[in-house]
Amino acid sequence: MAELLDAALDANEIDLVESFNSPLPLRLVCELIGVPTADMLLFRKWSAAIVRGVDPDYLLSPQEITARYEAEEAFERYFEVLAEDRRVHHRGDLLSDLVAARENNDVLSDHELHEIGAMLMIAGHETTVNALGTMLIALHRNPRQLELLKTDPDLVPAVVEEALRYDPPIQFTSRVALQDRELDGRTFERGDGIILMVGAANRDPAAFPDPDTFEIARYVDRPRSAPRHLTFSNGPHRCLGAQLARMEMDIALRALLVRAPHLELLTDEPPYRDLYLFRGPLRLPVRMRP
Ligand code: HEM
Image (cartoon, rainbow, N blue to C red; front, side, top):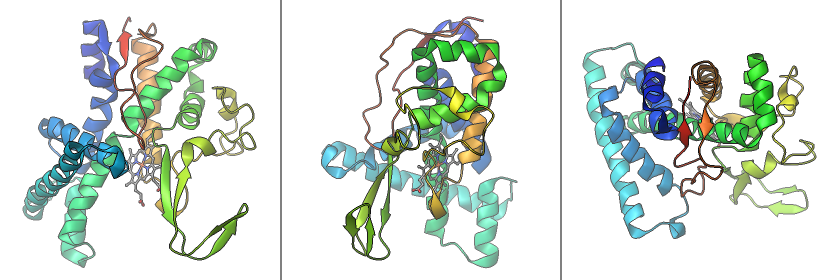
């Protein structure tokens, strides 16, 4: 991270998404899984095609649909080769452990192994890059909250939590009803697909008074009793990387406060990525000043 910040500070005016928010989680997740960082750019291209490709097909152009299938195949082929290497050499990374689990217990098929690798790469990068961006935008648009934070860096965990609630990087998730059920006056039949709007739930006034206000006091001194946002979803499929993501956001924000205390966003309306499920800025032009 220090290396990324050094380069960003040298450049003075930069796109923070390109220079910091994206490479930080991407490098971390590459290291965790055991993907050589030299291949990072390939992954960015493939995962960009997939995050667009998970939006409903009727919103996609024929080229975007083709790019999604090509990226899925590219991921599969890439992890085939990498897993083969881990069969021969245990390199102390997550992929080596997954391959060992496959070899010893036969609990995973080859296809599942490759899918897990690809999913971790995408889930571990495409969300956190957006979360860092939306957190910085929220602070920029709420200067009094930013001033509070600058006077007391112990507020960082509360800022992270409120940023996750206020502008979640994933807007919805889905489930299939396992049985007939009536909920809030609606009937769901077994097998019905259900879209759960996380972004809307996080702004429910019954759970969060004055929900459209970015208010870090919601999460100060009450990590257990504060209302829980649904940004990481809930139940058996709750985000596996929630704690890692919080830690990344916490460390990145503290580093920015120390190394670039006069960080200045150069626009109030940064362009957002043209996506439906994932949400975050496409670019974040900033002036970095130590
Ligand atoms: C701010 C960052 C992140 C957000 C907002 C986020 C959000 C989510 C959401 C909403 C789900 C879907 C859960 C569901 O359908 O119930 C999910 C699943 C998942 N996430 Fe994250 N995530 C983040 C970071 C990460 C990181 C850093 C990793 C790992 C390196 C990760 C790994 C996963 C995995 C493996 C799943 C699938 C869990 C399953 O299906 O059992 N996520 N995440």
